[in-house]
Amino acid sequence: MSQLDSSRPAPVQKSYDLKVWLVFLIPSLIGVFLFMTPVPSGEIMTIPIAVMAKAIQASFSDIALGLIATIICITGVMSLVFSVFKPKSLTKFRLLNHLFNVSWIWLVTRLFGMAFVLLTYFQVGPHAITSENTGLLVLKDLLPVLFSVFILAGLLLPLLLNFGLLELVGTLLTKVMRPLFGVPGRSAVNCVASWLGDGSVGILMTARQYEDKYYTQREAAIIGTTFSAVSITFCLVVIGQVKLEYLFAPFYLTVCLAGVVAAIIVPRLPPLRFKKDVLIDGEEPDGNAELVPEGKTLFKHSLDVALTKAEKAPGLKGTIEEGLHNAFDMVFAVLPVVMAVGTFALIIAEYTPVFQYLGMPFIPFLELLQIPEAEMAAQTIMVGFADMFIPSILAAGSIESDVTRFIIAAMSVTQLIYMSEVGALLLGSKIPVNIFELFIIFILRTLVTLPVIALMAHWLVG
Image 1 (cartoon, rainbow, N blue to C red):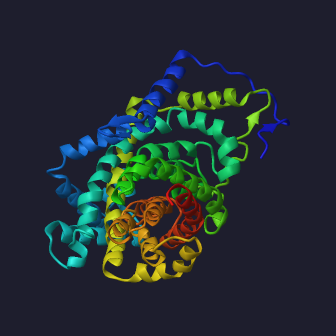
Image 2: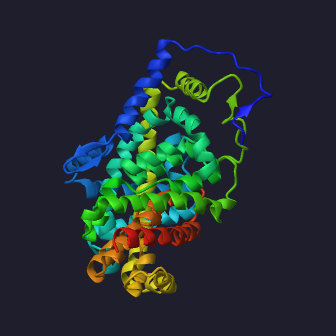
Image 3: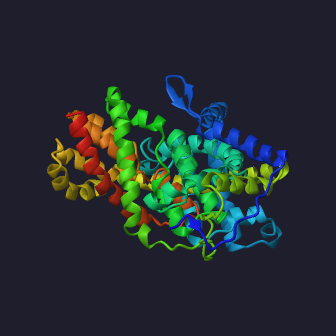
């Protein structure tokens, strides 16, 4: 794709007043600080919004489970009311109609989420649903974290999205992101926010930009499944679980290298390759949107695009309203899906041999890569589809080899698609991927990253 279009007339240079510059700079700098600036938190580095999310989580700790259970039940009941009775007195409210008027697939998913959360919260019913390794793990350990992140991300994401920052970064990085990964340059911001903060933030940013018609179906699917990377903080937790903290630097280097290789290869394979290059409403994207007009430098064009966005930005009231809408959307729409899908996946992992059987075909592949204790390692490969942390837990208790534990820890991070969080978030969003496609992407990421990780492990650890 050419970055210069000589057939286009030289643009009229437009000047921007101080107000537009301030509208661009102040919210964007605050957003960069909150979402992308590393700050110390105890012995680790994180980002301010993660610190704020932990503070919210701590302040709501006494009522968090009851509040989350109530929200999921309200979502289930209201979705049933809207789907069955379609009350005109309620459907006229745009936000309520958006939140609760869903297809039958999502209605069933939300009702399962409601059933699971009630059984788990009151500790009644089958132990397979309510145990600390299934429903209680999702309700007690995962949902309070997501709840606090959703509230803050929903309220504060407009700082990154609405005032020109993504336009500036996206235009500048198009020459890198488009040829390498087939996505717009603005997706780099999603990746950085995930890398420094939380993968759920990256997915929420991607979903929001897809709905706003900045990404095509193919681009949204690629970014959501490839660039919503695991945070540095969680990588520290994983490597600590397998008791290899002293290898964190080579471990994170390995994760980054394998992630880049997967980001280059997997989007060029089915199912991502066959996603349509159309917007959410089926329209064709503007083919000239990324071209640099004749007579402009790349930086000058990037700045002009950013300032034009800032000039059209909503005021304080509009930004607050949008933030509240985002927060409600995330909390009510996504939490029930995470509860339903996450619990179901963990039940399969905990109480059936499905993932163990699925891992058996990988034994020859692991032996070919000269990975010690290949048979035990194979059992951990597929279980990562249910939850990212389970492989490291299994490895810590059953595998002696440092090389193998290093490989399993790195693999669980680079597989990326796990149903207790990332997978459920993707399914709960409007990003066009289904559970079968997520499983295929999970397998592809495993096959692509495993040789890279094994090579690095033999070099760095063996």
